[in-house]
Length: 274
Length: 133
Image (cartoon, each protein chain N blue to C red):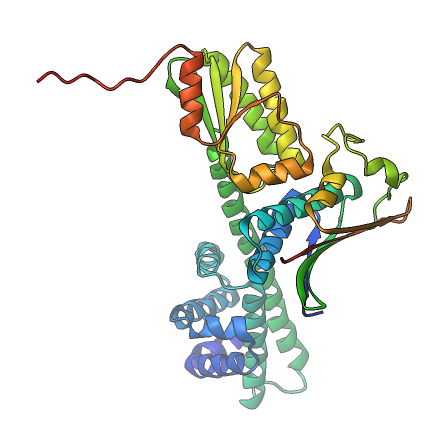
């Protein structure tokens, strides 16, 4: 009965629904409604509801997955989606009441039915929504980890590790591992750590860098910290961090020059014969 | 309060957002790049102390307007185990976690004003202010 009502009054419900959402909306929600995707996506939501009530589970599951993917991509807040469904359920009930489909006998049953499929649908959407987010986050984590600490051989015996972004405990561990493994693998004599892209050097970051430099020294190579910007240099001094046991250079360029000197190499311009 | 915004510190990534907040406010108030770096580093130290020792707490950034001067105050609050000997933690090189032990004395040097209040078992309250010159 509910199903028939929704099917036959779909357009009316939809219009009323958008109207009501606009009335009770705050800023984030009205942004969503203004979005041109709103009407297609919400039609999808109604279709989903119809599928759910009519009980065709297989199609429903795949459609639901698509739907959650879509709302995550569109950036709809979950709160809004849940609220939308609530409003939809209210509308259906009120509409049926107005049309005289609800009487004192079946009132409880109708309400129970609506509540039943609403609850199920909301929990399924929340479930799918969060798992889509979780997937996104774990993908990003992996992408971050891949970017995290590359070691690049530039000349014989000279390798560079450019660091970009915030260094946390996990990353510090990875930096140390990659640094030592790579230095052995590439038979590095000099390892340059470039911290131009590290926004903040606090005592923890400094501590990890000092430790890494010490470990590199233990395997017989020289470690140099390059890319120390002037404001970073000032904060390091104010913090009272002692970096005197590590060779430091202003830029990667001067670091490479110093490294070439250590490895007894030199870059000379070619003499062009005329 | 309108001039104050806070970040809860629950995990390592919250340290980054506290820092970001501090940097934005510092920029807005017109601090130069060196002072921005000082302020963000100080926030980083304080937030990391919360994360390491108290587990959770919050960092608040407050805009200060006093006697025609403009400043930024970092307030670090936690309900952690507190500090037993304040004199000791303000000494360079003292650390209970194997770190460099430069955190709190470093923050004091990075900022213009520094106030610490802590009782064992009762949490720690640190306020550090930097004035715009």
